[in-house]
Length: 307
Image: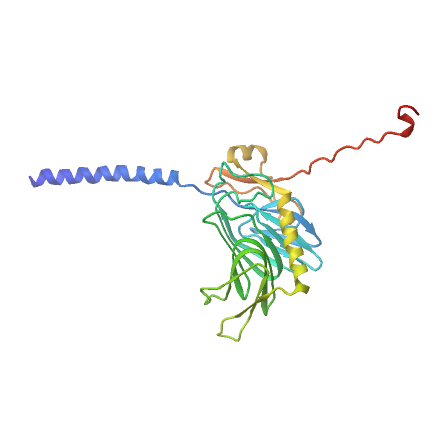
């Protein structure tokens, strides 16, 4: 009896070993990975550079980069306007350094609105962006449920749930102006709750002596400062209208754009195509083409009837 029971247990264990890897493989195959997120340079004025991976490029308008790990740095008198592949516009002012620590997206929804400046982002996304110094303007589409967007500075972190916000930072303080939407501002890692800003309000986060958390002061945006913040955000919003993003199948993408034979460490050209990943989608940027204006035919008076 014991022998039969032992055999039964042995057969059951063997069956589990055979079935379990198959079930595990099915779970892995069923897991959806998002495509590599992109950032599109809609406007480039002055001298600035973009680092993606171990390559450094001179900023050139109408080029797209893999977003994760990208570092953007503008010089005196320069500015850039970018569009993330989730539809968020970002203006980068002069003397600014922006580090995209994390930006990931799930596969695009098939029934999404793919027009420029679409009201909703195409899929769930998570982004963490650090502003080391300088100023930016951010203009988002409506974030879908499950998305998150965080901008940090040396003194503060800003959780953006949608809207229009300008952020300026230096070694001593960070100024956040909310023009529209919903954000929470935190001063340092110990500020767990944070403070919610309402449209028209400004948060000033100042560094404190060593060992003390930064101080957060909320007030109305000063009238003399409102124009600068509005201009930064307006450029970011206008950039959103210059490009759409599509998710294409990897096979189709590989046939359209083969990788170059060699790629220099630095240069002014377009960055190389993304390295292949396990997911089946690749995001491509498609600059929008403005509608052709109507052709006005001018008829000379001497050709008019009766003359």
